[in-house]
Amino acid sequence: KAGVTQTPRYLIKTRGQQVTLSCSPISGHRSVSWYQQTPGQGLQFLFEYFSETQRNKGNFPGRFSGRQFSNSRSEMNVSTLELGDSALYLCASSVTGTGWEETQYFGPGTRLLVL
Amino acid sequence: KQEVTQIPAALSVPEGENLVLNCSFTDSAIYNLQWFRQDPGKGLTSLLLIQSSQREQTSGRLNASLDKSSGRSTLYIAASQPGDSATYLCAANYGGSQGNLIFGKGTKLSVKP
Image (cartoon, rainbow over all chains, first blue to last red; front, side, top):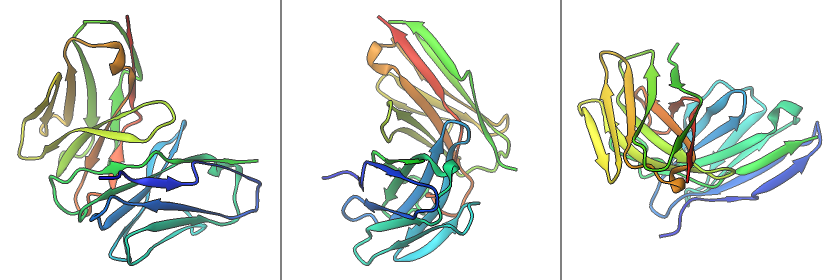
């Protein structure tokens, strides 16, 4: 069974630009979550999608948005990039996201550098 | 505010040593706690998940315990190997969706041959 895949793996953008990251969950998984990882703040929850609906949202500005498609693939978008958005963006999937014994499976991440 | 703390931030041990990594959480009303491993530049790999009703979970050389009353979890690694070198993160789930985990900042483990 293929794992969680994320594209692209690396990205360089300049301030003010926007970026779209993609995540394909494990087949059969319907919950997709996004996290931002930085050396200073660690891993922080961005949002979670289930059945094309945002189910939970972290404490990030509106410049960060996402969506989920009918095949459970998800994209996140960051508009008007700032230097502080440089980070490793991780996507995780699970079957339903609500089973207390469910494990989250993480992708390799997309490393974004904003210049 | 719900916070997860991991001490120490870094740990270096010789190969073969048994070791314990610590994780503490401010709110004891957790639903479960997970331990992950992260290799440099990579995503996270789930190691163990302990539900709130459980006291410990074991997988191979790894044993994780959970004490909700004290707000603590430990990850015990037996007979450490150089391949165990990685950053270990614990994450608490406070309910709602499993996708909304609160992570500690991790303990970077180095096992010297």
